[in-house]
Length: 339
Ligand SMILES: NC(=O)C1=CN([C@@H]2O[C@H](COP(=O)(O)OP(=O)(O)OC[C@H]3O[C@@H](n4cnc5c(N)ncnc54)[C@H](OP(=O)(O)O)[C@@H]3O)[C@@H](O)[C@H]2O)C=CC1
Ligand SMILES: CCCCCCCCCCCCCCCC(=O)[C@@H](N)CO
Image (cartoon, rainbow, N blue to C red; front, side):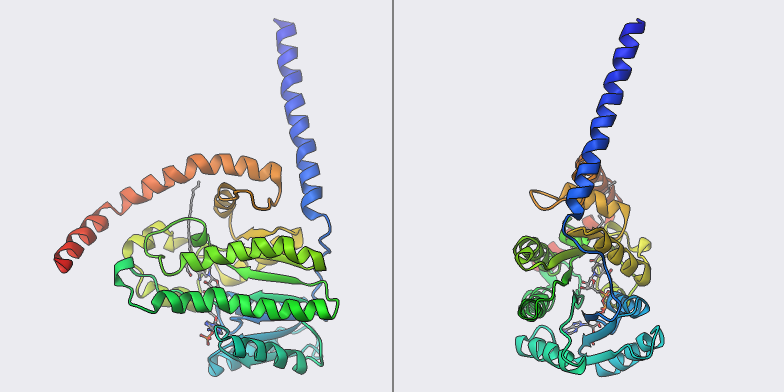
């Protein structure tokens, strides 16, 4: 009996020890080659920097000593954001530049970046955050022609145009910078109501995964951020059209503060994570959706993934049960409307 116990103990300790060693190796591998974050005197370029997540990100960046460019369309909101961001500077030599452009237009995207570099005395951005994005959630059948294309054009192509041009300049000037795309947890998990939005965010994930490997050729690190709901003007906009089914399933009540959300993004970048989330549930979803993409820490991700494969279908069943009345009502109403 005693022999049996000590044999079990040895096995348990052996497994824990092996897991610990694996964890350490994974942590080392994940960080390998990623230089520490350092924003002091760096040029950080933030599209969508006039509101919500992008604005709070710009605030944190100037607090960390960066020069910042924010890009958005509406001049009034840009001016307000510029004032707010400027008030957070550590040093008045820090430049805060605001540029009005529609990033979904290739010419405007490129011109905005050129202007930003000129206004920063030729300094190419070391950090590029493609934050601009939008959604108007509805039932699939309620979208009109053009809606899908418009959202893809802003969320996906808007980010792509900015990043491609920035990477060109980085490589040309030998800048070993970082690029960040902003996807969403809705780009990982299918949620009714996001048919116009989720594909744009899934596309960003795959773009970033590709660039994570490809841009390592030039010493540039790519990150993709997958936040859950954030309390922003964009969130208020989407809630005006969001079906109730969507509100319940995506956890409307748990929306987080944009500053906290931006801090979590910077934390993930500091760790060198390719895919970054805003909360622990996000880590479960991220790991369960990992596929053959890059891991943050293979040892931890494997545990999270195993949890996700069981928990996500349970969560799906529970939330679907919570909205059973709305599902019924929508089915009845829609059939009546279309027949
Ligand atoms: N809020 C949330 O719950 C979540 C948001 N996200 C994503 O995070 C990002 C930020 O979201 P959030 O802070 O809520 O967004 P907001 O709507 O609050 O702010 C969006 C910003 O992007 C700018 N923008 C929008 N379209 C364009 C365009 N075509 N060209 C240039 N700038 C543009 C807006 O300015 P202007 O309109 O003046 O151009 C504004 O500065 C988005 O990509 C969003 O999809 C992801 C998960 C959850
Ligand atoms: C124990 C494991 C349970 C698994 C839980 C799965 C949770 C998924 C939650 C998805 C939330 C999606 C928010 C999308 C926000 C967004 O992008 C929009 N607000 C657009 O702006």
